[in-house]
Structure formats: structure tokens, C-alpha cells
Length: 595
Ligand code: M6R
Image 1 (cartoon, helix red, strand yellow):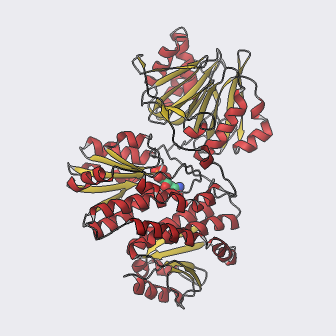
Image 2: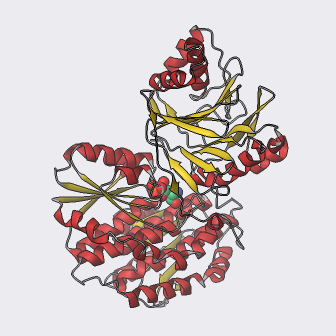
Image 3: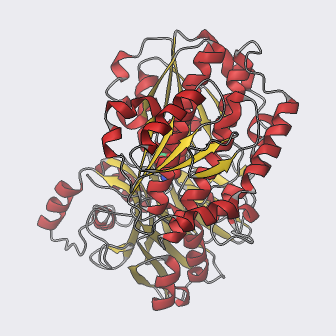
């Protein structure tokens, strides 16, 4: 399977040097993918390419990417397992004549047959990527259509199968791009035009964006853009003002985005409730549905698992949660008049998008909970709620998880006939509780410092509404610190996992005082007698804990919101202890836009 989650950027600045802007833009988008980087600029009618393996800053330092001359250019950061991480496979990719260079995000499903065909026709490939077929196809069709660029682009897009967005530079200074199931956005600045996979690629220079429709083709020349559909009709798309502030993409006083985003949580917590005014409409869909399904990936899936428990207990609504990568296998069984609630920070996760498309085809209504209101998922939805937590740069989802929980709590609150009441006073108290929990930062850092450096396994136990948080905490530890961690429903211990526990194990128990408390203490006893170290996270101390993280007192149902915070902080400090970069975990990318 190919995996390719990249950032692409094109820039036509007329009088401004392209290279420093491209490098800067790629740094801003690096969270999407980060194993190699490259840029191409046009100088004196010649396309110059510089590319290498590593993060943008490293490659820039070594190759001085920012010094490539020219006012027009394209750039790329790559995240790939296909074709190996090396200079040759880094983008941009030239055509045979070096008169066209291409950067690409997505997968070309039929690249092998195209490569074979093009090779027979005399094209010589220099990389092992699927992406390189695009530059060769453009070259082939430019020749065939006598440099009618739009015709050549259309023919290229019609030949490619898969999901892709690409940006190409031609030796006459033309920049063009195409969007087919991968994001591509035009940034309109006073004296420059950008073409990017993410608004962060140009937000420093302009907040005016055009979110291209699927199937759109764009050309940029002399500081002007033109958009066409696949039938060669000129089309108009609206210019949107992007609400995100650039300040929220900087690290500020923090060493990493991840810890900054963890500490931002009190300030964004209530935005998700107060800045959405369509909760009633959203909930009407849920009320009128014959069946409710929830889908999401990774952290967003964990939010769904908590929502299922809250909906059942407080709103008396049964919902089935299916992780998006598995959804496909159930989609035929969805009843008509079902509602699918899709949860996704990015709104671009391929597994989620495919699930939703399948469900839509079967007649389900699509409701979504997203952070990016202009995302593909938003466009596919009958109604959506926005997280409003600002851009999340750290690859690990932290503040977006809390924001998702707040949206979900509010849905349950609206539907629960006051059984779960998230009134204003409670919301304010919750903000205080989150602030108080964040004050544990230094204490948790010291706890993590005490743990054995050779620590190999961490288990997190919880029951009922705490179980999804156990899963979420273990995901954070795995991805940030590269330590094996497992979230376990505490009652399942004796059905197998207890065999793993010995005097080298570290077990975290999520144990606020509620209906699950006593049973979790019993599980802790079973663990203690096998010699493991127990870290208790609770509002009540117990002698069984070797270490204790004290949570503020709050209403039972809100404990998941505050107990996840110590787990986020632990994961961050474990990453530092393991000397790995918490913002950019190896092998991962922020938006997984391919299956
Ligand atoms: O953008 P999404 O919420 O759809 O992303 C889903 C997952 O890829 C994401 O939550 C991933 O698991 C994070 N790295 C978790 O921290």
C-alpha cells in the first residue's frame, strides 16, 4: 500500500523572490509530512530544483533552498513509505526535458501501468514514486496538444486514477494545479497568488482563500488565476476570509506546539459550545434518525466511544461506533434514515471521507464535527458543528480532543432532558478545573523523570466513561514517546491482560470517585500483588497508589475531560525523556489523507 501525506505549495509573486516564501510556507505545513523536502523555481527560463532528505530547516540549512533565484516556484514536503526516503524520491519531479516539474499529494492508483506505457513511449523515470508519472503525462499531452495547457491538464487528470492534488511549474512561468479528492486552496495576496494544500501555507501573507472544488483545475500566470472544470469550462469560486489567526500557529513561550496546545485548553474549551449556533438543528437530525452511527479515526474515534456511553446513559439513545477504517465493511448494513456522525479534526482523513461517502450513497444523513469548516467532510455533510479550537499543529491531537468532547457533551445535554446539564455555571467551573489540572504540569514532569529509563510497557485502566480516555491516553504515549501502551477496560484484566503484569509494569488507573471506583480499586489490588507500579489519577487518594495525581472535584460525567490532561502531559514529558520530538512523531502525519 502506498502512503503519501504531503504538503504542496505553488507561488507566483511577480516581483518577490519565491524561494524564501516557499521555504517559510513549507515550514508552516511541515506537520502534515516531514521526511524530505524540495523546491523548484524558475530563473531565466530554466527550472531549478533543490531537494533533500530531512526536515525543512535541516535541508534548507544544508542546501540553501531559500537562495534559489526566481519569482515563481513550487515546493513540497513528503511523508512516504513508498519508494523509500531519499533525494531521488523527494519532490519536485522533472519531466524528461526538465521543462515541467511537479509536486503531488495523494496516490496515483494506476501509476505502474502508466509508467510502463510512458516508458515504452521513451520517457525515462528517475524516481520510484507514483508522482513522477504526472510530469511525464503533462509533457506528453503538451506535445500532443501543442502546448494548450488546459487541454493538457485535463487529459492528464483524465488519465490518472486515484486521489490526488498536484501543482506544476512550466518553463514559461506558468503554475498550474488540479484537485481530485485531495485538498488544494488558492491564496489571494495583494501581489502574489499561492496554491497550497493548507491555508497555513499562505496565512502569513493573506487570509483570502479559495477552496477549490473537487475536479477543479487552476492556472496562475502574471499574478492572475483562472479556474476550469474538467470539461474546460471557466468557473468561478468564492473567496473566503479565513478566520484563523497566524499567532495561533506559533509556539510562543513554549518549546513545542504540543505542550502549547495542551496549555491552550482552558481558553478554547467553550468556543466549541458558544461559537456554534446550530446545535438544535444538528440534534433534530439525531432525534429523527432510525439509527445513529458514529465514526472517526484515532483520537476522534475515542471521542466517539465516549459519546456512545454518554448518549446511552443520559439521552437514552443507542449509537454504534465504528472506526472509520472498518466502516466500509459495515456500510451495506446501514438502515435507510440512519444518521452518521463523523468526527474529524481535519475533516480530510481519507478513512472518514470514504466512510461518509459510502453512508451517503446508502441514504444516510451525514452530520459532522470538525475543526476545519472548509474541509471536504464539511462539504459532504448535511449539518456540521465546528470545534473552534484554532489550528492544531502538533501531530498528536490534544486540544481538538477536548473540543470534540465539549461538542459531544453539549449534544448530549441538548438531547438529555436535563439529565446531563451543561449549564453556564458548570461550564465556567470546568474551565477552572482544567486550569487547575494543568498546574500539575511540573509535578507530572517530575513523576515521569522518576520512571525507569528502560520502561517498555505502560497500561492504562478505566471503566465505563473512563475506558475511552484510557485508550486515548495510550494512543498519546505510543505516538509521542514510542513506548508500548495499552488502554484496558479494567474489568477485562482477568480475562487475559493480567498475564502481562509483573514488577516491571507501570499501570495508570483512571479512578475518579463514581460508580466504577470500587471495582477499579479491586483491579488495582490484583495488579499490586503482581508487583507493578500503580499511578492513580483520581480525586481521592488511596494507599494502593504508588504515585498519585490529584484531580479537582467535579461532577461525575465531566471527569473524562479533566483526567485526559495528565495523560497528555505525561506523554509529552515521556517523549522528552525518550529524546524524541513530540511535535513530529516518526512515521506519522497530521492529516492522513490517503487510505
Ligand atoms: O483529523 P482527524 O481527527 O480525522 O484525524 C484522525 C487521526 O488521524 C488522529 O486523531 C490521529 O490518531 C492523531 N495522531 C492522534 O493523536
